[in-house]
Image (cartoon, rainbow, N blue to C red):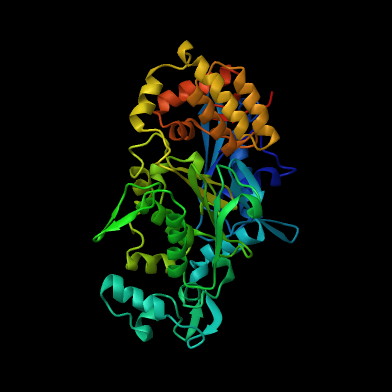
Length: 485
């Protein structure tokens, strides 16, 4: 949602870029007659004239014309205009003027010019195509699919007829060209940007590979099936308590639940943006957590940390390889992966966290062997925020926090936390929250609830406490941000 005090006719690009961005991303509303900063309803003298001029300018300067609805609305007793823009399906939507065409997309609450990569994705969406379905320069006979056929035979107990099943799976076109999806699943793993970098770091922070990495591997030049197994093996081999196999089942008394690791790795492989050349998936194991980073943010342009994590729509950036992984049983079709990840951490207080921006997606899985048991966490919350009994523990934790500092901003926040009477656990979580959002990103109460492992009502209380201590501010209702001293 964007707010405009009035209709700007001399510089219509100031608001038409939001129309383009909403149409290219996930839709939205432009409210005319409301000041943005500070938020104040001022109303419009002639709303009907605004409606007419809006309609005219959209038809002339947005190409193609998006789906939209414009109507007069009353807000706080004053007349305003609500322009509702729907997304798609004729992507991309350009702002067109003086012979130039510029497509905009939504990044958080900003409308920004689409990068060449984002524009390519929009064009594919408009063609109802995905990158992995596009034909490559390789032809049948240039690559092989021995592993794919053997995996189907082993897991599904069915033959994979290369002549018939490769085209039906979208790995080969009707005229014999290998698609990008075929290049990702062939034995040779032709696309270099499918590689995975794995690192086992010493302690809880990154350092230099030469001095602070206990183990590091680079996997490339193989089928996604092989890369998945390589990454799983790396996590298992670098866990103090790895998952073990008994009979046909895996024993789940491990640092990281096998099902969660498999789900996150599969999602990283099938949902990553393979159009970002020179990029790779990073699998990083620390003492207290596992972080998996994949190139490319949410397809709808939103940030996952601003959404209800249990109600995220299932969207597939790479339809071909997604379908193959579904047939192999590597993933579920009904979009239940996040629930499976969260449910594997019900016994501990620390929960998996999800973070994204326009360029990458990060999933963090806590090490269950060093995490706090859930019951202990509940008792800690029940004990109250300002208990005098925790003052000694808080002082001890502040020393630990300083030892964890790795940059100036974190060190500065640690010093400020020293001067509060927050509990030790709240200080630790506040530092985790800060490392995720820093001073430049905003968050909501649901993000705090997920990180602190509490209900939203309790999260709101924690946020009020942080605001009271001058650590956090609220630039607008329901939105929060760390503030510098």
